[in-house]
Image: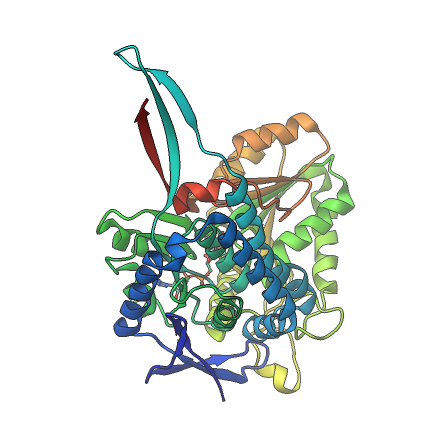
Length: 484
Ligand code: NAD
């Protein structure tokens, strides 16, 4: 039986307490995960603190950059191991995991290493009151031990999106992967060891949130900063923990993103774009589109086209050719999504397609499948229009004017992302200015340049990560004033 161990101070550590890791495709047992208790979390934080004082803390930026490139190369060398681990844990289609999760997971180490190597700091020369000169410059120093708490939807990619810049900036990390997806974070421990990252720089503690590794880590007084991706409600709990000791947080949280399609849009591209934004990764993408607004002249045609696309999606396991839709992450999440499907019906939605569980045969019948689902006809107050579902579903409503589209898009507590489809430049720029989000895609979705800022506004997050913006969180700027 496969065992997923904690990785503490460069050693794999078993604990007496395990929980099951099951595959969402067919509910088979993948292995047992060793849950970290307070003792293991304390040990991981101690190891991370000690590493800051050792070789890692004294290492030149050039050597650090070299090592992080080696980490990326080693992930790529073991690409198939990472791919198999991610597919087993998430059930996502191979086409997606092999094009996004693993390559981007590796790239995050190189991109941030290169940014840190090249980014300048400020320097000013000034005249002092006594007529002399002083030189004032900035030094970037690591924040220290960073707690990294991760979700399950893009396990390696979203974890290295934080660990990459944290290490590039000279910090050490204690990672708490999601209890649903322990595999790739554990494998990364082997990679760190193989390429010679000093012991204690990268640590992994497995477990859950409350009363487990997540809470122990975020409440630990010797963790200097916390970066978290997950639900907004969890973010509120972690923020309260971080208040003790006034420790900084970087949060990437939930969303209820609007997709807006104007009548002048390139129709086929808009349909293809919304198909991806609503259904990719079985709708388990924080940037996904669960509210679609379509300008009235093309509304009926658009609904029919999206229905056809949804019904053409092949549902199945990761390795099967042509599969576009995998399962949800767990039975618990399947029940949550099906609960929303039932609520939509109860609230009077017109069901365009889906709404249930697809018929699967053999072992797959045990998997966490749901049908891609489209509704129309609900008021803006309906729960499926207001609350994040995190499933392959969307509600489509018509609108008439640009003002109305802006008001509808903004009528939410969240502010993560939007995708706007139009050929009118003025409309596009106006939407970009007036929709309150961290990320606005025009005639595209999920197109990312890793040098740019990523994050959400309102209840969707705090701070920005990506490019030089990551340095704001992962370093402290120290001002040095030299009287010459
Ligand atoms: P979650 O909040 O349930 O869990 C995330 C992580 O937090 C897990 O590792 C979990 O064990 C841990 N955790 C839970 N309670 C905790 C506590 N009290 N203290 C410390 N740690 C705790 O989120 P999830 O279900 O894993 O992920 C889905 C959510 O993540 C969705 O809301 C989605 O929108 C969001 N998300 C956001 C982004 C983004 O970039 N904004 C990206 C991906 C996912």
